[in-house]
Image (tube, rainbow, N blue to C red; front, side, top):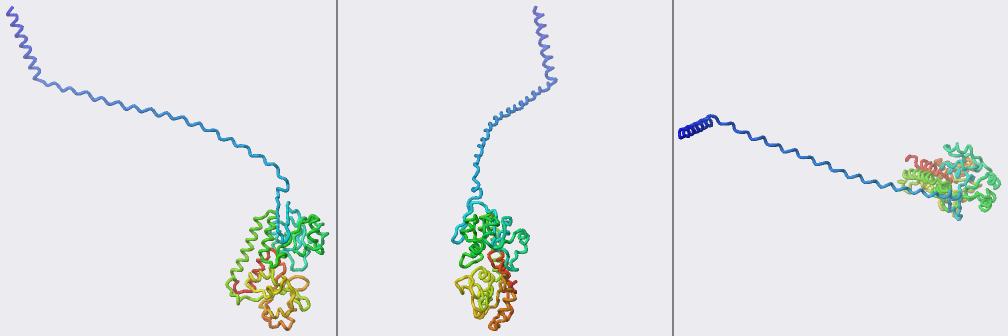
Length: 367
């Protein structure tokens, strides 16, 4: 039994020695650390849920425009009131036919595009009384009517425009007579004021604009006329007073009497053109008769001959030149006679041209 135990003990010791030797002969490879586990990719936050679009409020329903009640016929035109001297002329409807008692009122209407309303004009009284060349086309269809109240009524006009002298029993009829016959009366402003100027022409054009509802055209025409006169006046504005020509207006003569002007449009245009009217304010009336001695005494540099009527230009000039008392007048010595058609210095659109014609004659070196 003891031999067996010793044998077992020896065998165990031998096994232990062999095991120890095996362990010292080779170093076991180091165990690799396990690869680090990758962190899981962050989970994307879910896209925010869009808030539902706000519900649009329905557009407000437009209320239907109120239905306008039809206006009475007279309200379509309105009421136009014209202060015409000491008279007030009222229009409640557009005139349908106009009788022009002179050429210049007809020319004003044509310039505003109103020729279709003209039913007639006066019969011209002299060869110089002809329409402006650029307006001649309109006058081809405008009849000339002899002056009488019967003819005014027969023309079918409901408006008559003329100088103050047109509204007499011996002419087209008085204001009262014409109005009783259904004809409105409009007097040219320049013939009912004490001292007419170009401003009165503008008033007449502006009145036509109001009556026929063409205010814009009227104002444009007025501005054009103002600009033309201002342009002429600017050229002569630098002339000294003592250097301005003295001008005498020879309208007509009767025996030894001369008809001339003391005030009014022609005098105004002479001044705007840089001249001096020799007989300015010499009489209380606008036009007056004076003697040949007045022509001599005023000693004019220029004599304006108004071309109209039965007396010719040649006859008027001869009346001056054949008078020995006039032989030393500067205008006669220098043969300085400016012929102006009377219609050019009346109440219409010709005023700027007449002003220019005068200025060019007064100061040829400035133009």
